[in-house]
Length: 218
Length: 220
Image 1: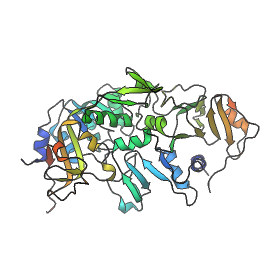
Image 2: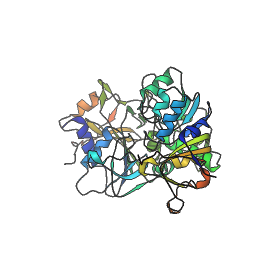
Image 3: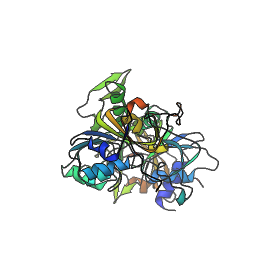
Image 4: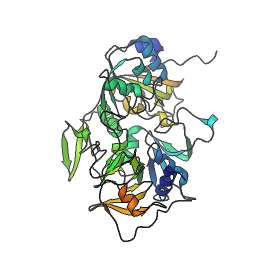
């Protein structure tokens, strides 16, 4: 199993029947493929739909039915469409149970930076700032390191997405939970030791007496 | 008086330097014939308010490719390297706005409100130069309304009066923008007789719509 699949399968365990969920572009989108059997989750795409689904067949693409990345999608029976103000009212107004987002950096205080690298990459924040500010639960799904450097840092050096503390960080090495005291190591990935996680992390971690191995969906 | 205009005349009414709101999300729900005609007529120095600039040679990306845009208010340009290049080179002035905030600023403009109070962006670079207000112990940014000279709208259907409905995710910013501009130009896939769109289904009321772009001849 590759690292991204592992992350997606672990994040899938955080979802519950009946949840309204928004998945960011890229790795987070993979979570939808690994829901536990029979779980009924409503996926929102911020361009204005609840009930998005995979495109049934290539020939059924419809130009007016797309996800937030502009890719063609399908819709489940019972799907509904709405304008951008309603879409972000759902996000900001406390109606969204979970958002899963990628990250560039998360720091010891649990703050996330994921929308720009000054001087290098200026994509814009899109819906990320609203999602992090407004969702009931924010899960960051990302690889632990990039180009050998830890993405878990003492203090974000990149511009913050929000001052809100995220709720859970799932990486290819570990599951971390931000708290008032700092980042708690909740789980380690299969075959990864606590020392390996510590070595790949640029800040102090709180290590409980018992750190179980990461469970994933089938 | 009929609101029907041919594409060329409707776009000719847009002067250089105009402020345009353009519907669409990564090209879905963008009025594509209007984009092509803006490029053909070579409008200059436009201000564009839109969610994104799609990709090069797609939707609003065509206006960027043709260097028609002097100023851009948008939430995301990550999919369009040419927009990023023009921003970094100083050729196009870009204001990045969180997507939900962009929607509310447009809505405020169209609904006659003095702006929106949002928690989004508090404590980030988005807060710079903005007023904050504390209400019941929570801090909000004051985000000012946006208005435009023209709104360029993509619709599923319009009737002869200009009542409009939208298709699926092609709705996005279109109904908000139709409220917030001086002149509203609608490019609908179909224009149908009055009465065909049931009153309950109409999203944008006809009084907002100034011009309907004549549909293309599909009868050969």
